[in-house]
Length: 119
Image (cartoon, rainbow, N blue to C red; front, side, top):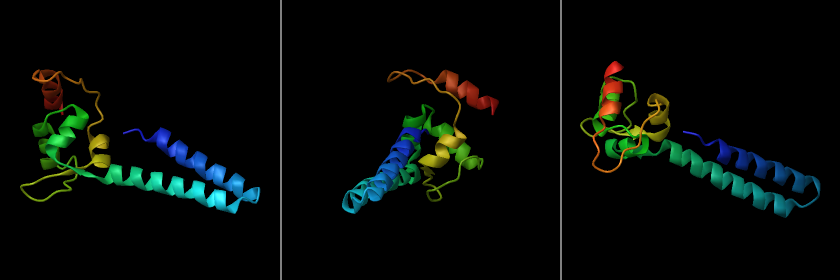
């Protein structure tokens, strides 16, 4: 999960706010800082969002069963409840960082399933 471009934008806005402040433009500095704060909070919430197994599968390109097995084995923390597992987006991408092939609707995910058996 690469949020680098958004993190750089937040940093750039914070630099701009500091420059405005040095130039005596406090109101403008506060405005730019508020944009940086809002974006940073949105990125944080996006990373911490709890996904269903189906949502996690759609974002990673693996099957919901694969995500569920990884949770069962403790490779991904369960952010849901017993019998209703969930996974935080930030945990998902750290655990399933293998490259995956995005399939067309209806195509079997044979390659990914074979790769997962190696784990």
